[in-house]
Image (cartoon, rainbow, N blue to C red):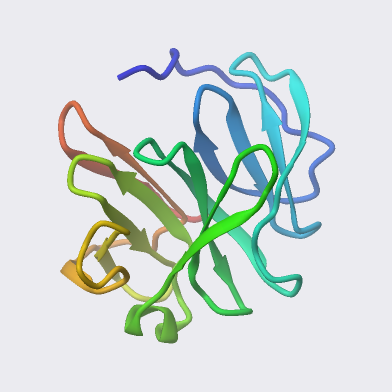
Length: 171
């Protein structure tokens, strides 16, 4: 609801923009170079942003946790988990994982602050999973899951309509 109108701009010179997050600025994950970058909503590059994940991780989708003020990012390879971190220093506060991470197939991430849950989806799984956040008794547990017809590339959550949106690869 607080997001600006949709606009298009180039993220070049990123070699492979893959995931995005929004906290007032637009965060873009460069999957190939394993870096995160921040942009203004008009496309001005504000600089390199912290990367909390293990060095060998592929950086994927990002989601802003408005409860803590931190950014969270799902990664592939390494531990296949959700890494939450301070947006300024990059200091990691939490790693959220569960048996779903052992499936090695999730790259889309969204966050619902009201219920403190993450939504994860991926190319190969055909499933959208709701994962317990930090305030739950067992962070990382699967709260719900549903089949989806298309492979997930990225996720977003709209709190006004309580709707999860997803994009597919190449679309």
